[in-house]
Amino acid sequence: MNSPSFYKVLCIVLFSCIILSCKKDSDSTTSTNTGNSGILPNFSYKVNGKMYESDSFHAVLKNCTSCSYRKIYIYAYRNGINNFIVEFLPSLGTHTLSHTDAVMQFLPTGGSWLKSNNNGSLQINELDSTSNIIAGQFAFVDSTFTISLGSFYLNRMDR
Image (cartoon, rainbow, N blue to C red; front, top):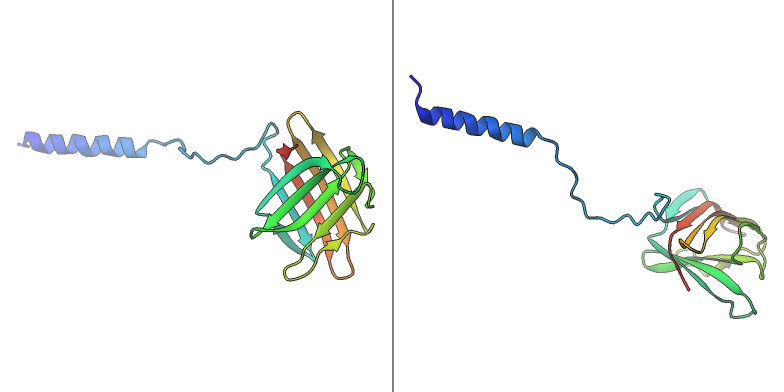
């Protein structure tokens, strides 16, 4: 005949198996800060065919220092260094790369700043000042670098 302690142990083992086999919901507290659209903020681009994604980025709406109108400036960083600047007039659509409408600047590792100099494109697809969303694509060519497949989606803009 079996002892009562055998049944106690058996019940504990079965109960433990049931508890451990239950699916636990994620308890992650990591904030993705996706805004209203569900898209994660990003700033990425290819340089001479190699893909890069910025570590951090932000946008600022401010007065142009050399003109009488406001521009949006997007600053992107890799390894703590500001290596990409996109500046443009706050409007949807295709922007002409010029001093007044849009300018892009890229800082290659160990190099000096390169400007877009009218050899590229900037398309702003979303610009929502209520929810602070800015989204678009860009590309430009310099004598030594080709920046392609550039895209950004930001959901915060400082004023």
